[in-house]
Image (cartoon, rainbow, N blue to C red; front, top):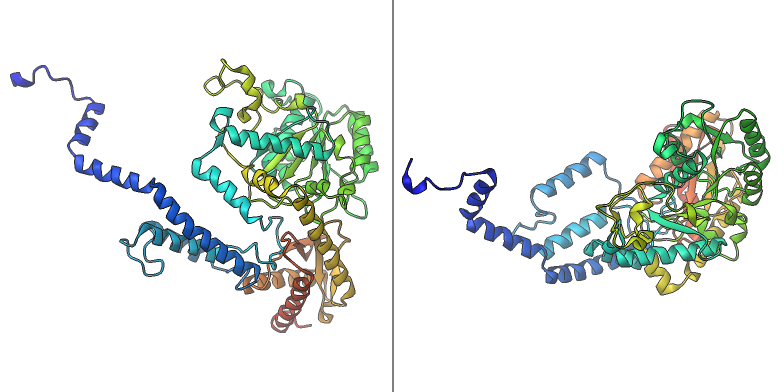
Length: 532
């Protein structure tokens, strides 16, 4: 062995890595240059100006209904195009080269995203329960995204926590609860919100189930729900170890609302057989037709049977902010837990869903855990503000910034205005359908959700199967044409159409145009496939 290297330290894997790095200083310098360029605040400023202009132009065109509501693209074609752009760093979108300025390539990518997306701000978008959000809400959200304000512990997202808890206070008070008596949090969507609330209900109802699991001895626990409850309730039952078959679907009245008398009978039957009950899930409103359950009567039934009442008010919760429609939610204040999606009728970007507890003592019941690496024992009082103790998520985005910003700018009156306008449009559409010989409304709406069928003369003697198939094919043709966006529906197993008027810029004339478009598309469809 050479004497001059006898005393060298052994070449460990870590030291070998350092030697390799030191032997390529030019590569490291280039890497650092690229990193610094990507983080350059001036680049953000330039790209931000371009993006603001692009967004404003895009929304102006959408609000004027210029172009297709849905620029339909075959999924595989869209995926291939997106994948190709990953390979060439966004070049050649519109003939650019890789040497084009980053801001130009950014603008081209942003424009592509806008051109290929569903245009919710077009008043002809009246489909799913996803709103045309107040545009400024997205800019408030962007602040949280650019600076990565995350939540699990207060110190990671202090203002995000403050905004969230301030909104919990406003919403709980709007429901009718006494300030200081309730608690709540934001989570990512109504499905996760329902799961969180029902997990809390399970833990309260079944004692030490969090630590010991659901017992297999004795009758299995049951969950009672509105017969048309959102599918997330069944998913929650499966995840919670209750099993989706544990759900007892409570019968509905003639308006599609949970029948309190049938609920009373079901609870009495379960109690008579010694079967534990986790919770009753009521709807405000139910997804299919927007029916609001009679919460006052349901709450009284739950009180008599000492059962947790959970209300899925993901869509309809915002009606409590409207003096005109608040009566639809009479009794909501008696619920033990409430889910309320701001990314529906509070018109902010997804996802922003509130879980609210009437009794603040339940705020830590969902998760009975310690995580000492997150939660500082030197400041135990801060645990009250650490969202990681209350949500499925550990890292959680600052989901409430958009709602907090819009509420702070415009006040709660704006939300009442949007509820009033869209609910009124639901009634207007129902009246238009009722007055037309070739349309059939399938229910009397309580809000902005309306289900219906188009029934031209040629289909009057058709079978239910033919009528249903016609509705679904008609809807497919309509959305691919780009004229309107509506969604499919089934009533009594037969295909139908459904709208949610969740763009407050939609007007009655747009609804007239929808009916005209359905007639025109329907005539063409009948000529091709549905000849009598």
